[in-house]
Length: 340
Image (tube, rainbow, N blue to C red; front, side, top):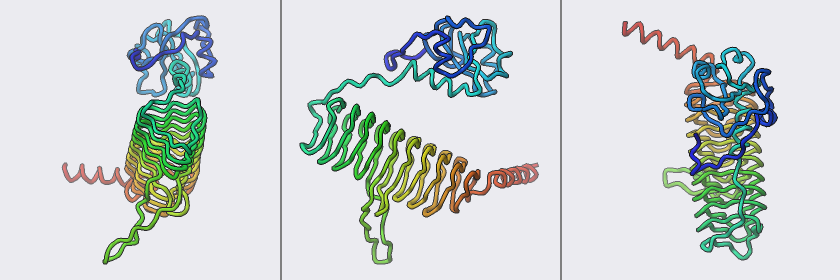
């Protein structure tokens, strides 16, 4: 059961409404008028909860679940416990996401400006925004409609933030242009200097970082992630990109639309990514690489060469995924022989 001290549930919803929301079909044995009040995991769900099954490892939990309703693929219908209402879809997790958002959508934004917020007289902030305590809006900054600026966040000079954005507490944003419906979580750092030095035996000379960070629409950036501004070219984060916590993105990096970057990834400067690239946790990238559309990078990969579109790679240095797995299997067999 969701802790209502932190999350307020919408609803209740009839099964027929949940089917509409999730874009699923109601199994003929279910009552479309039955009502459900919450979402819950398979093992914790009760008779008035709806859950989902998207991984075959949880089939046994599904068969023993007390949930009143469940989103399932067609081939799992025969494994359902007696009396469970089923919503049938080829994408149960997508359906669940839609339903969970219906129950727990973002709360309405109440316009507010804390008395400790500081807004420069040359900044433009829409009247329907919410500025929490200690937030600072610098000279010439522009904040769009219905934005939420978290406590102790700094929005630097001339930064622009589009409509319906949520900037988490303790963030700092400089030299940046942000699109609409962007979410940044607590502690995000955007637009600080890139790591640029002219190295030499007599000392290292700092190179001015004169670019910006350009962030598209519908981007989400996880807690304590850092995105450096460019050296002259801009650092660009395409629309629809989802970035996890604790990611480092260097200067001049360009992420195409729809990329997914999991936690602890480090991307060196001037590396470019096509659209819908998937990057596993703790992967690292050398600089000045090109990663093609739809490439998949396994967790903890060390990428030192360009990757063609659609390729899957793993290991360090990263190699085609089958080649890498074959090498891992050979090493395991050699180790077993030696220990045997």
